Image (cartoon, rainbow, N blue to C red; front, side, top):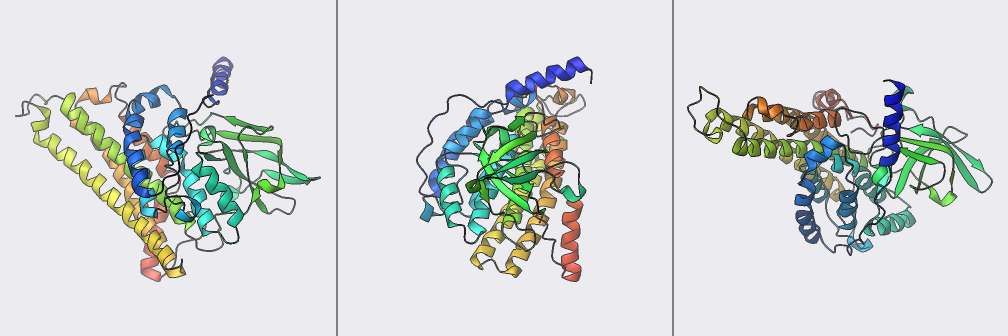
Length: 418
């Protein structure tokens, strides 16, 4: 890339990182899931409107991220005892599917919040953290991620955190900072002098932290998953926290993180179906040798829509069934057997949801002719988004883990990816 072009891009990035200056006040916490469902159904059509155009223009949906948080739609799983609606994993995942079906970028960007809640629910001896973070989330705050780095074997953390007097100093560079630009707080990881991973969460305006909108992938371009840089950033002792994603034992948090990806894929498939139906009804015309006067009467267009619909139906059902398995594990006091089964079910759902989203995105082009490729429709975003989400974790490993379980009773790894 020429220097002038690179400089112009950097300037554009810098001006894109600031959230809106004024934000509406959050709604009161929802007492039950039914109220959250009502709020979701009222908001989702607004998010869907011009989502394809936003992606084409690369306009980060700051306002919609704030509206989702202000409506309490990140709080499905917060128990009633803490002022939340007390929803199930199925309730939360169902909403993720619906949000991804109108804007897969926004759904993925908010993933850290769902993982944080699951970690707080699963953790032991963290009552103070629960009350602190549940109150913040119920108050409309958004948490972003700044934990993953490039390079290093198996994604080893290279950022450092060093004690200095009564506080800590962090230095390092993070990539794939999911949702950071939309967030009020940034959660991250660094290693201390002894090489131990240390987790911390700080306000997004903390001096020494720079958020850069440089996420440059083929899909999911608006997830605000770019670079986070720490330069002598101060961290207070009360901003440290325990890890909510243990990798040395089976837990209920990892399956939720992975199922979130499957739900996003199912939502992408649904979005491709909706666009295909709209295009066939409103834009497509029958090919010359078709016996139909309208595309909606062409049997091959009908069959294509039916194929996509079947993919969507199965992906959504598989994802919700896996959510039920996680809920069953909670009902079984998180026994190792039930958690293992949940991981297996999630792996199967994830494997299929990826295939369904990619196939649905491909078939959407078969309902019309060359005009389906017009940039104004942006139909290719579905495949690009599905492919990008799929690359979080190789689906071959998902299938192989299920096969090893069925053939040898070998449980999936506890790496955080199952």
